[in-house]
Length: 199
Image (cartoon, rainbow, N blue to C red; front, side, top):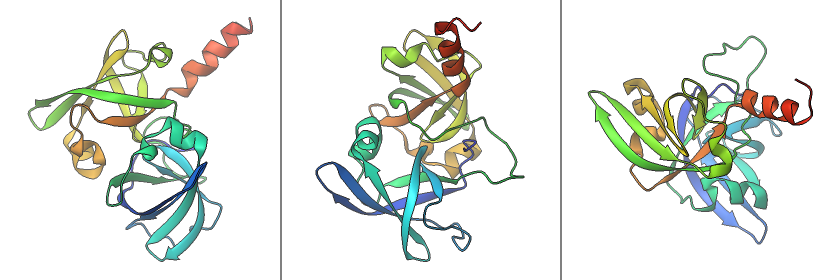
């Protein structure tokens, strides 16, 4: 589990694509001495399993065909910035919201509006995900926990504060780019319970 509070902006160091998977290496400034092969880390909000450490500041991961299909990793390039958050440990503060790292799909940035030092991002999502967007609810974009300000159909807006702009890759976003989207876990469980007649 994660909270959507990014701890580092890393970088894609290498990409090796195969028919049904890809191997990637990421660079981080976080101390990796406590990390182990098999640990989970959220990379742009996508939960990846560490497969090795080519160097003290590097870790590798293998991305399945499903992960590539659902996330922006199908089009990332060497040198791209990525948001990093290690998995929660017992006693860690819960500063954002419950984020699983299971990306639902892609959201497209439609508008970027400066609001003083802040920015309002307006994004569109596939219709299948729109029902999980709730005003004042939570959403994770590239692994960043954000509060939804407004929802209109399959469009929603979020306000990004200066700290988040400077400490994540959201400050680099421009209209037309896509970001990893994870809707609020609670909404999906409520829907499932209602479908099963449990409520």
